[in-house]
Length: 210
Image (tube, rainbow, N blue to C red; front, side, top):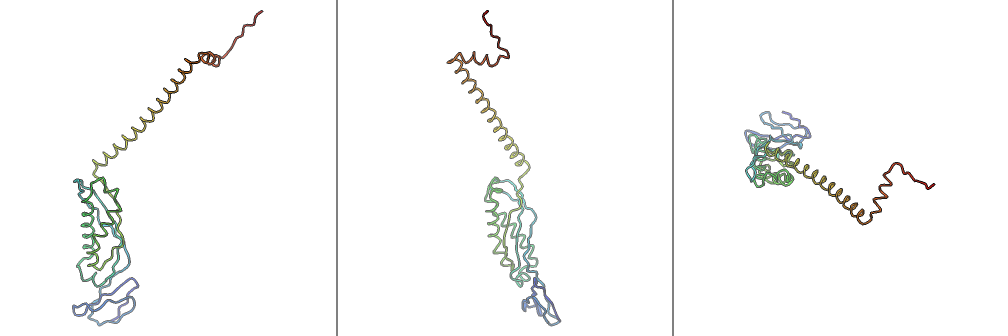
């Protein structure tokens, strides 16, 4: 019986219920009762469903991660678990939960990189048992509860309004300072007021002596 495996495939061969060998790409001749499980070893990305995770201060934060992984041991991938995808998903959820639980809610979004590194480290032992290598983990989304999002928006608006009020106060202070300087000059130099009056007049009439 002939089997042809593509470059991205490995064939895990069982004979009479026992693991026999792992075949690489190419054409192979096997006994007709041999069972071959094809395993795709190409790198792939996987985004487990979002998860509501409690933070250290008791806030439920919705977090989504993306995994980049590939099969490095086809035999372990077939033998170690009935559903290696589900096991990988569970390992990601547990590692994410452990990483978020140590942080307050206001640190989760700011520390995405550190959380991703902790998830990667936490997943690796179980992934190795499954014949999988997790290449990278990224935190894709961090969604706070609606009440916190509203509070954060109000805080941003309040800061903007505060900056605007500060700029208005600075402008008014500068205007008052200018008026004060003008008043001092007028007090020290009365002739300046007469010159200003002459500059402001539209018509100057000079009475010539006859």
